Amino acid sequence: MNRRLAYAATGIAAVLLPLTGVQVATAAEASPLVVDLYYDASDAPDYQAEATQAAANWNGAVHNVHLDAGGAATILIHEVTGGGSYTQTDGHGRGDIYIDTQQVAEGNDPTRILAHEIGHNLGLPDHYTGPCSELMSGHGPGISCKNAIPDARERAQVDENFANGFASVNDGVRVYR
Ligand SMILES: [Zn+2]
Image (cartoon, rainbow, N blue to C red):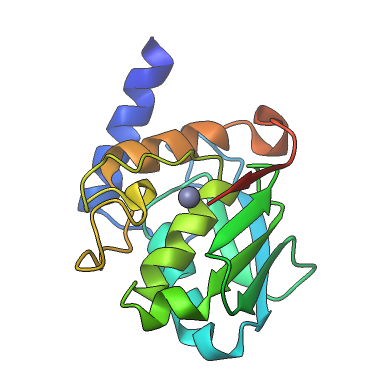
């Protein structure tokens, strides 16, 4: 229970003092373990900027995991035409993301799609009945919803998922739409 309170307090601090790109834990910080994840969007040439923005949105929202382009990427972003956007992932930083150009053409926001699919790679499930303020509500709120930033509960859940490094979540590989 104290642990949950500690996460909640961390979430509030994140709103007041966004730690953009900071990976070095201070002495006062509760969790010194930051999981560095690398993604590769080279197979999604039309969505390079959107992938960068989606990763930046997550980096500005959570403390215990950080996304960077390049490196030995474990999150691979692909552009496809038809079939819907989805990801196949272990829910803990390894997976393939597929963004459907047809869904974008129909008006779905590509940054929201990518941030949503990254959310699955960070261990979040779908919640289609949620409001636009939730990333994991996905297409639920309709194409007018352009929000690509996780809400407070989603941030807290991801920080909890990565609180103990790579070992904390292992649900096996699944496909999420
Ligand atoms: Zn989804």
